[in-house]
Image 1 (cartoon, rainbow, N blue to C red):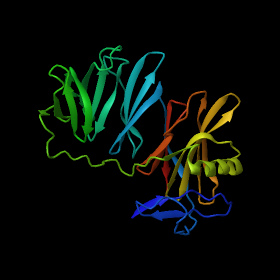
Image 2: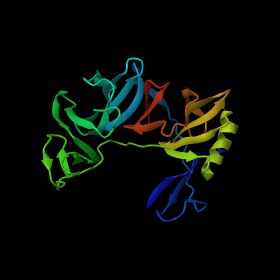
Image 3: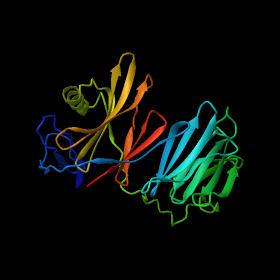
Image 4: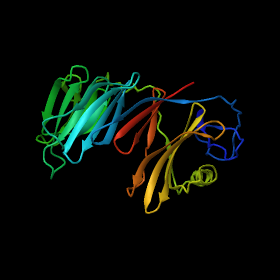
Length: 300
């Protein structure tokens, strides 16, 4: 049976309800209501780190979070690997000979695969290189190919010189195969990774959240919001207008619908944020002001 978590009640003294449904039953009024005993929950700041450039990409594998940051003034891309359990960097500010036209294509287990755009006018012209996260040594490089898929320790690529012939590559060694090896496990190795649901104005649940924002938070929520229930807490990231700008804010609510954390993530005239936060290793992780990475431990 699939466990689907329901929306928080808007009543001041209400409880959070869980909604149980089978995979084929439509999400609707048929609910089994379970009363959750109130439990005091707190968030503890684990780390907060400001990067030189804007945080562009985050990739999680096991206990490590790989952060790509872009300094638009210096036109420099750098990479940092953070060990989530202790909040320490395994490496920070790593750069390559190509300062700008490079990003992360795949991060799995102990290997990071980067793709380099060889021609800024032709995004199909790429080369690839892989490093080990422990010794930072380059394991292999490859050019005149295009990656078309990734599956655990393997990439699917096509040759740009041999009539788009497909082949497979083990990222740990650079060894190539004509077919996918049988030991091609793609099991999840990131503990407790949870992403929020995205509700847009077209969703029937958006009106519920909008009413909650007006009544409990005094905010006119517009556009879209991220919503997640975890460990008897509600995590909500939403947008509201402020003068000619749009504010993206994160709030964490306890069982009594009281905010225990409220942070402005971004304020400007940019578009809607679709994935404002996530949870991994019992940590709430989010970016504040484009370049500051924050983590809060979710206590039991």
